[in-house]
Image 1: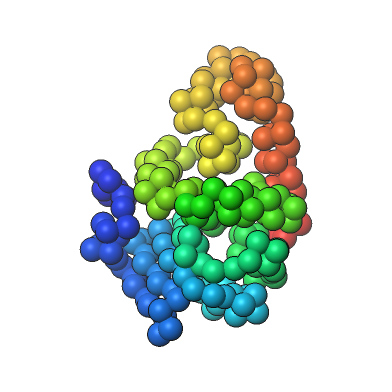
Image 2: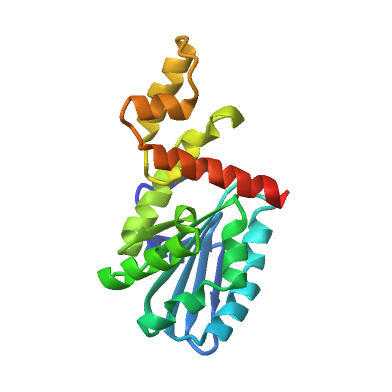
Length: 218
């Protein structure tokens, strides 16, 4: 895949493979290959938001026929809601979207208090590990670009890919762990990574929980 030197919203608009704009102006969707950028604004009652998520869930489903991984970025900085309403947006359709392991999801909000609120409600729902949080689109797209360029690991070492996505470990650190295993270290990937101080044990537990949920859904 040819990845631009700088992946930005403007670049995606110029090279979009799909563009959709809501008649009410409250949403815009821009997709470039397997990267989909959702710009959400205005007032969204929880029921309306649930129906919207249900409808747009077909987009990653279509892309997954061609791509192993689909990146979904939601910019919600201009979305209007009261803090006490935040939990209403963690609805059934949103949780379904989060359940698919082939989808990498990011939430973007420049307001530090709101961003922390989004983190908190997803932590309560047990889904914090499934979402990346950013303060600006530029940060999110820079991270996606790194993801697109990062090496993919074989099935036995997918914990490394998972931890890279969580930003708990770097690709270079993953290579160090794999090299240690190749040199004869018989410990598991997570055990070596923790011993080297690359990650904390709770990150490894998150991966185990993630695998268990995937297995239950199959």
